[in-house]
Amino acid sequence: MVEAFLKIRNSKFFNTLVISVIIASALYAGVSSYNEIIPADYFFLLQVFDYSITVFFTIEILIRIFAERSLINFFKDGWNVFDFLIVSISLIPIGGAESIFVARLLRIVRILRIITVVPTFRHIIDSLIKTIPRVGFIALLMFIFIYIWGAIGTLFFDEINPERWGNIGVAMLTLVQVATYDDWAAIMRELIVVYPVAWIYFVSFIIINAVVLLNMVIGVIVDVMTKESREAFVPDDEKTVK
Image (cartoon, rainbow, N blue to C red; front, side):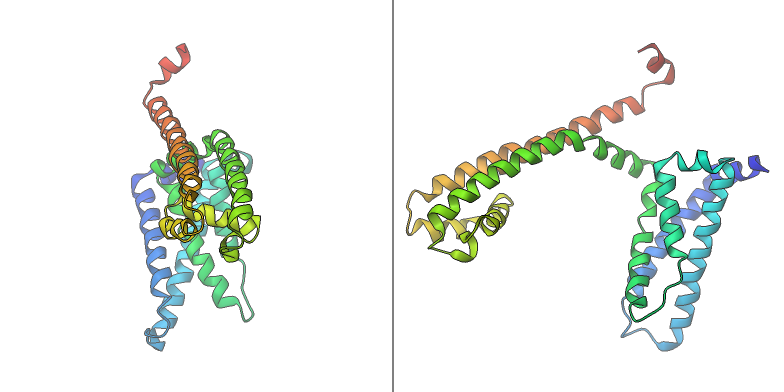
């Protein structure tokens, strides 16, 4: 019996069917947002379609559980836990005034299952998770520089524009906007009228945070994903020798 479930789980047809249902669920989440133009007669059909998707996902997760022979083996994989939580939440009955909002939210979250079904997506997410320790230190360093430049900005530019430089909080938010190049020239132009050398403040901040540190984050992500891709194509016997 277990072999039958294992064969179904590993079959190309079954995986293709799951991906197709997830895509259908994504389309349904989009269509259901057009409540004003959808005829009332079609709402019942949409509900039946939604329930059918939920039933399919429930059957699919049960097949995968039975194929693992035990719940312990199934829950050892973090992606299986992720799938199980999404399907379980979808089965919770919803009532009350906020039921429509919650139902729509669950439909959107259900689309995330495409990550667990497609191996390439899982590989990308796994690689991104492995970059967190290294990227975290770079992000901490960025925060320190933003904090320092924000404190300096409150000292010099508070009286010019309190809405942007009135305190350390809003000053840091302004610098985040500058780091993303979002209309930073207009922000600088407003200050240069009073402080002609204010360009040094902005240029130095952009070079350190937007050019150097942000590119370091990209470099770390590319480096980790490149190593993961190389290891994925290394034969098992060569891994053993290493």
